[in-house]
Image (cartoon, protein in one colour):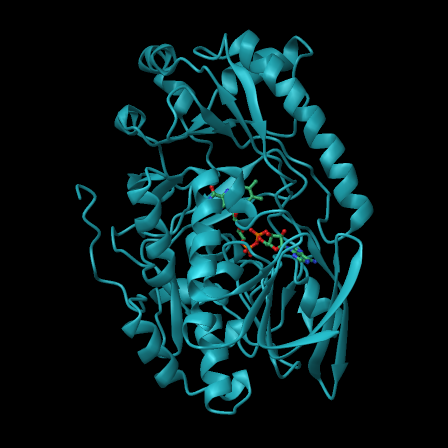
Length: 453
Ligand SMILES: Cc1cc2nc3c(=O)[nH]c(=O)nc-3n(C[C@H](O)[C@H](O)[C@H](O)COP(=O)(O)OP(=O)(O)OC[C@H]3O[C@@H](n4cnc5c(N)ncnc54)[C@H](O)[C@@H]3O)c2cc1C
């Protein structure tokens, strides 16, 4: 039996969740198809949500994404937004609460959720998607809809539908993050006070860390290059990373490590992903031994958890009606067709290297609606990582708060398209923006976030 919906969203991560919730709240019969056993996508790893507050201190993502944070806050699942001299703002979340809140918000909105459901086939007629099939724990199921949103991160739906897509020649590498417990932060801080040079950032960062940030409850640390050098000399370190990056979690003594790197791996290629998983699991073993032997405060730490899967930074993106390019940084533009704001920095894990580069972005910029609309498949929108963004500026838009903002915009646009019997590309953008604003989305800069709240 083929079930029919108004809208099908494929991918239940930061892009897909607000898309499905916004559309269902607007009255669309909405199906969310997710291949794993839980909602949340990469937010399930425990990484902090970046991009809620920009470098100038403006609150730049509101609406459903901020509602996630408020609901998490009520449950003790986040400490809210914290300032950070490198990442602008950090919103540390408890990934387990994020999963629970995701289920709750989908259920309340009336979204039909499929888990363990991997997209298999996509049927198109006259440049429109008509039907998809998903493998649901060994059972093949078919679904039809009027509009589709690809929120798979890797543009799985778009590529299979024959949508025009782009992929950079050299991709930012994926990483597997993991959590360790029993870290003695006081011992770490004592070392830092005596050796502030450990936190000096490489020249490829256009900014510096400051000592005060490490006294906060929520912080990200980049450093320990001196121990990496020593461990290399001793034959104890072979990872392609010149610094350790870790971030605090809400739980005392726990930190999340973002240091593994699978250079050359393309997460849209099956064999390549397998190679990346093997490589990164091996790197985690090496890092655990490294932490215990070299890193002050980490002597008695233990491996608490490994993220559900290799995290992809970059693969396929659609070619949209519009593409956001680096030009937006010349005047920090928020054009009239802006449907969400990108308030992070251009953060690039330099392909095939051990380096990371960050270009500071002083103000958020607008993501135009056309970046979410397929150029050639008439009933396809995207949300999240696979939006139409030029690779030169992609490091600015791939963070989770920004992906969530795109999701709300795509879901709201899908509803407007169906209500006005238009294709997504012909949606009245003024009406779309009005609806987004009514739902507390933020489309212009200038509203300061009060960090003391
Ligand atoms: C190592 C690493 C560290 C990062 N650090 C941060 C950070 O600190 N803060 C931050 O804000 N951002 C960070 N990012 C970026 C951010 O996490 C991602 O860009 C963001 O999660 C993208 O959201 P998304 O919804 O587009 O994709 P995803 O989060 O990847 O979600 C996609 C969802 O679609 C599902 N899916 C995929 N294919 C299919 C299919 N064929 N069928 C059905 N379902 C499918 C997946 O299971 C998943 O649930 C990091 C990324 C990486 C890789």
